[in-house]
Amino acid sequence: MKPALPGFALFCLLGAAVPLTAQNPLPTDVTILTQNDFKARNVFSVGDALRGVPSLKIEQDGSRGTRMLVKMRGFSSSNDVLVLLDGRPLTHEYDSIVDVSQFPLSMVDRIEITRGGASLAMTAEAVAGTINIITLRPHQKGLLVDMGTGIGRNGEKNSAGKITGRSNLGDITYAPSVESSGGFSNNEDFDTTNHFGNFTRSFNGKGYWGGEYYYHDSRVGVSNGTPVPLAQWNGNMEQQAATPDLERTQVSQHAKAFLAVPLLYGGTTYASFTDSWRNSQDLPYRGGPASRDEDSRASTFDLSWRRSAIETGLRAQRFERKLFGEDAHDAMESGVYAVGKWRAGKLTVAPGLRYDRHSVSGGFLAPRIALIYAAGDSFSVSASAQRAHRVPSFEELYFSSAVLQNPNLKDEKSVNTDMGLEWKPGAACDFKTTGFYIRKTNLIAPDASSTWANGGEEHSHGIETEASLQWGEHDETKNIFSVNWTAQKSRRSLPTAPAMADSAMSPRHLVDVKWDKHMPRSMTFSNELRYQSEQFELDGGQGVRIPGFYVWNARFSLRILAADMYFAIDNIARRRYAETTGQNPLSGGGTATVLSPQPDRTFWTGVSIRFLN
Image (tube, rainbow, N blue to C red; front, side, top):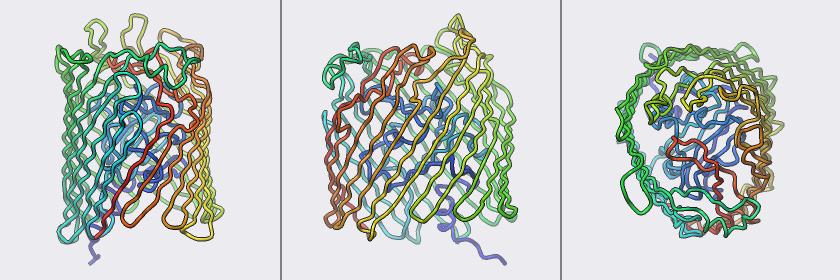
């Protein structure tokens, strides 16, 4: 008889109940941010942590606390990026507008960013890539209590804690957080409260079961941009120029139950059910009736079976949306998949096939093939090709005006190809680079009558490069240096403009350099320097333009007994920090014609206390 795997050993191996083959087999396409990366930076949310990742562009409504949307690989829409929570897509639940600022890092174990085609075990609805937020779990037996607080400029405050415990009775996690700010610009004050909890229980060492719950409550002011010309921004003028307009409130809840049974019919079976609710309101500043009041709900059932190098599974989802003053809308989506991974000598082949069917837009077949050739322990070459799609959102299918809605919209379709190499000349050095080309057709965009319609296409290509180096005589004086560079270009045509033209508010070149120095007596000094070249907003580069700029951030921390004390400065050089355009909340996140400045130089100080039993 084969020995049964201990339930908790299996749980740690899988990582938050996500099957192993759900990971993209191409290492050059994947960036993983861990808790060590979070500690070395002055970041509080998932959106903060994603800044500087190759090929990622963060667009924000305004200053700290406002909504953050993610674009990837030069595409002009955040809808092309799929955000997942423990492998479960959030896109439809949030009507394709997933605000990554609402996920505090106190509840996150790691963030897995996959550029290009993701594993079909996750989804085929990832044209540009995926961001998988893996929630916190205990990593060792005993009780760990970690709590901290910090204060910054403009009345910014952040307090967070986490409790993780592991015993013979099971694993338990609880992570609360509270954050608030007076706002950099007028009417950009905000406050948010989050609670995350998880419980996992093994049954006789032959699997595990458990549940988790996440609650988010936020209120943030939404400024109406700034009329100050970009050339006159000096760190103070734009702070007073924003016009008070709206405030957005949001309450989200996620409840999940999961089960894993190893050695069932020769493999391991995973099952989970998640039910989520959200209410979002846009209110006139200082009170009054809501201009937008939306309730949404998503229910998801996942079932998968894995044996050796083969995995099969299915997913069924139901979505509901009720926008005040309109009819309620609902949709069903289901999908089945099979993926494999086989090795013959130095060559690894990973084929896959997935079929999804949406109750409105119909069915879609998505094949994928990935090849990895390992020339040795230090050098490998990989390539992949995948067909992907994007289902139209409720906002696109049923726009607020009955005249402009189009319930006959079809999926956007794409073909993703990339090729990369990874070279590790030593244990302290790592280099990888990837070239990519993506062609998206059947775009969903407004036509001449401003009705959402299919038509036009978008092409994106570029190169992503990452390198890291470690040196130092002793572990306590280790130096870690990393740099990434991205060059990308996107062009698209629309029903109203059939000629191909440059597109996207995205830098053509981005360089991000990080240096961490670990010194004696538990001192750490971290530096980050990020340069972004000129950006523009659609219209062949003739629309809104932002010149290139750089941002320099630094942080110093000192550990005394159980306390980590830190002092940080963001944007030390007070360069232009205008990397976003305003998002108009009344048009479902469409880009406005104004710029939203970011804070200039910001000072932070705080302390974190850690208790380990």
